[in-house]
Image (cartoon, rainbow, N blue to C red; front, side):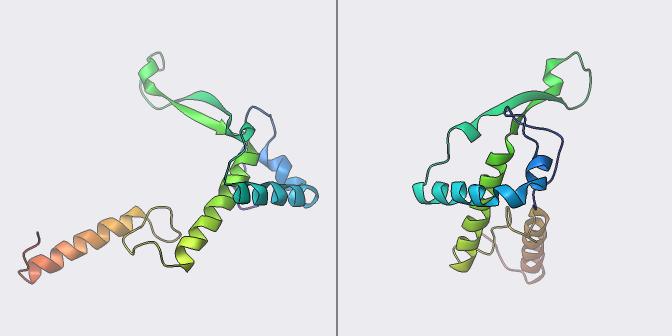
Length: 133
């Protein structure tokens, strides 16, 4: 339910809104798929397929260089990906595997925090006449 609902759909033409509305009925099947994926250590082949579409960035719409490709995945692959990401991050956090300087892909820690931390360390070193090598 935490995934952002959008109107886009992958090659299977199933929208995330539809899955959310019938989640009560399909949650056990999705849970089974996610558990099998975790135990097998292999992501199923079909959810890997994506619809690739050009997305306009800026500038002249006739120039092909002003577009970037986006991959539209199926909602099923997004669900499995979210479960895997959540469990992996929980494991890494519970066993204190990530270093404190790891800011990306962690809740409440953004790359701006990394920039602030680095700037703060440099300013402290300069104020205390510490040579950084």
